[in-house]
Image 1 (spheres, rainbow, N blue to C red):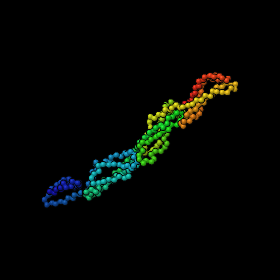
Image 2 (cartoon, one colour):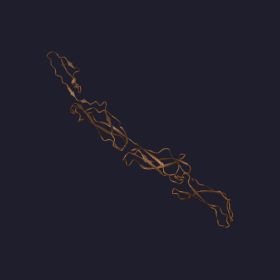
Image 3 (cartoon, rainbow, N blue to C red):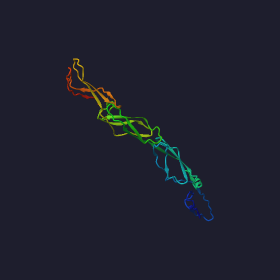
Image 4 (cartoon, helix red, strand yellow):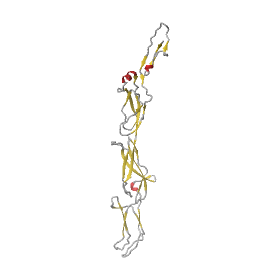
Length: 278
């Protein structure tokens, strides 16, 4: 009886040309059995890539993995910094030279083949906040102060374009020169683009146009010339610099019969002024 003991070869597997562990031979007959010991394969059943999708952070990022079996190490090809879809990364295996059983693994195991995986880097959010710096009356330009939240450190060119507000009343776009006092306008912002950021513009922003301060002057004294005279009315507005400036397009309304010709005649009059936007 020839018996092959496999108990000491638990880390290897054998290819035996017979399907039994013992063979009965006739008396006087001898036999030679060839046992081929082949290299084992590493168990990669627990090896996984953790997360193949990253958010842009201004740094080079790469895949992560876990479950690497004992005896080998792995290295990744270069990752990616900017937003990209399906960036190819190659994982290369090597024997761990610092392992105490390095020689045993080297001689008795096959290295796993390289693996290819794809990395995706998605856009980060860049949130814009807007604050009105000045009170706005008709004819004045709103001044906005912006702050940007979410730009990664040392990112010198996070976006391109010019940030600009748009004003709407009842869904219709309105230019600044058409602002009307005591009206509230919806404000939206646009104009920026970015390869690495989702631009998040301010929402639910409104602008209420305030009444302007005016000075109405009535010239009502005249030198007698035998002709009838009516009051001469002029209107001025306080501008953003606090100076009075003439205002055009005002309409004045008073009784046209209020005209005087002779010296000493006096009448009380009421003047009403109106303007398309003030």
